[in-house]
Length: 566
Image (cartoon, rainbow, N blue to C red; front, side):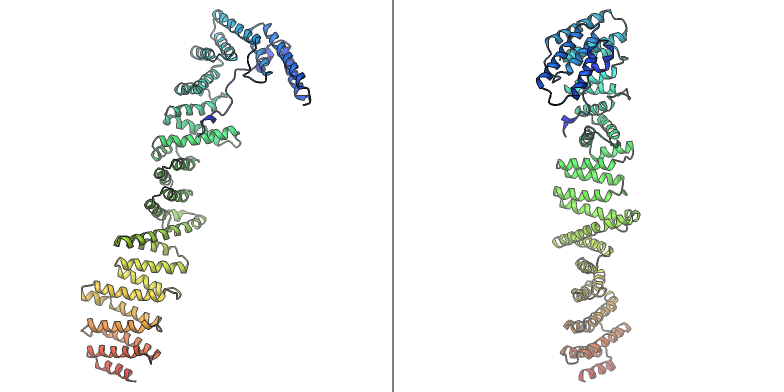
């Protein structure tokens, strides 16, 4: 923050001779005006030496007229015009001028003793301050102004005087005193010094760490400048400085809580998101990342449906990433998805354009979360972590990604559900991966994985009735595999395994087992008819015959034995 650029208008100057020219009554002021106008019209080739001689002659004439002036005020007016002819306002005072100014001061001091009215005395102190200022006697000038301000608060010059005193206090780092004087200037809302005093009172309070009082003043100034359709370069610079120091003030107070409290008090403003953003970025510039993220979070809490909320939520993620907080990055991505997903309140009220913008970001975060928790689960072996991965894989599928991506995610979902020992849901997802999409490279693997899930699910069930309860599904899944991948060598193997399972685990030939046997026989016949010369076909018929004999179903056993011998 460039505190050297605080000033936005030129420092106040005492009333120049231009404003009192009509009071001089002499000819010199008119001569000056004529000369300055003529000089502007003069060609640039005018000899510099002649130009200087003219300036010097005119200067001497003005000083001479000042000596003959009837009163000190007129003399001072002449001298001010004379000083304008000098190449620099800081040029050394010539002896005649110094002599006149000292005489003016003596005159005013004498006149002060003889003046009885408050207005008259106020005017005298003002002229004294002016003459001391021209003599570069700053302390004496300020002393005269303080006397005027203290004793004659109703003087016509009081606003300017207070502003001068404020500027002097500010320049000399007496910020508490400056703040008081600027406050007095602000009592006159119509003065030319109002905006400058508003801005610099805020600065004065900031410099003495009175942030609570400074903030409303900075905002008042920003409000006035922000709405201007046309700003001067100085105003634009001052506005940016004001916004910078507003950010610093909130940081000096209590960050997000202070921001929330302020806008809770003043209500919603058109620039509210800008302020939150600037405070957050100021934290980031200072490498204070968690506090920066808290600022973004605070704004979203206040305005959860703001069109800028998704952008600020992304800023939270980027901030944690910039600061090197991977766990917080993942947590922020979770919060993003929860707040903006297709089932959220935000999504339901969002425009079609907003939804279109959100979708790629949502999908990206969901993919990252699924991979993150899957990798975490593989490291920890914790079922809870596998379940978290499953949650995000499901969320990804809910976005209806393109089929290629959906297949990959569906397969991963099956894997994490299997690892979490959630066999029923794992089977559902593997079968969906195997049979619900166009045939793909993972189709057979997914179908086989579903059968593995049935095996492990069966082993996890200690109750025989419970195991029987899933047998229909298992048979159907095995047959479906054999139908879909009939030419695969594993088709016969999985059917043989199913027959063996029934043989080893079932003694009663009840209706359910009979139905399973019929379904299995139908698929075995299809395999044998397709591959009559394959050894695996013969083994299937042999196994099925043994199964029927196991259940004393001799009629069925004879039928399959004949098929074997055919």
